[in-house]
Length: 179
Image 1 (cartoon, rainbow, N blue to C red):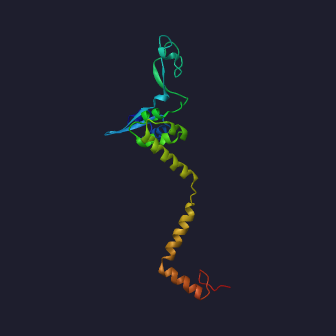
Image 2 (image 1 turned 90 degrees about the horizontal axis):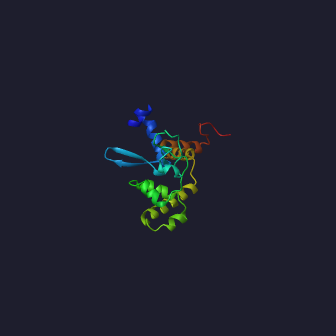
Image 3 (image 1 turned 30 degrees about the vertical axis):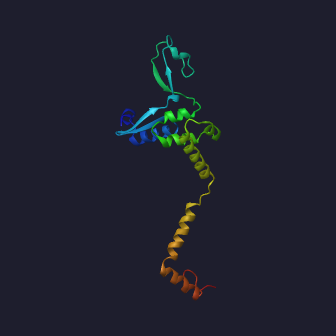
């Protein structure tokens, strides 16, 4: 992995970082035959040109540098509002990412779009699913494990025999007489 070599970081650190950037929509990936190709989302790129003679200096995405500064791309600090078309374009080839990002938009904005009915339908379903998940009450895992152990105990014929014997003879769970 080139990034791991260039940064002297482990492959797992680079992979984790790329996954985080992908969740934040800073980069997006396109799966190919030889692995994933990562691209930077255009909303996060700004061009910094030479101070004189650069036409993009007056652009809201760029800032002026010293006259001898090199042209380079850097990460933009501010986020711009995503439109439906931008989300679909930026995540091209990754349907799950498109649907997940569209599901984050307000329902009114999804309803107002009529150019992408397939993605809008999937995004509305995903949005409803996320709402259900956020409202659901989950049982504590320890409670589940306790109930499963009870089931396994009660399915054991020797255990059931012992319980019946103790009840018949008025004994506690250790086999001592109850008071």
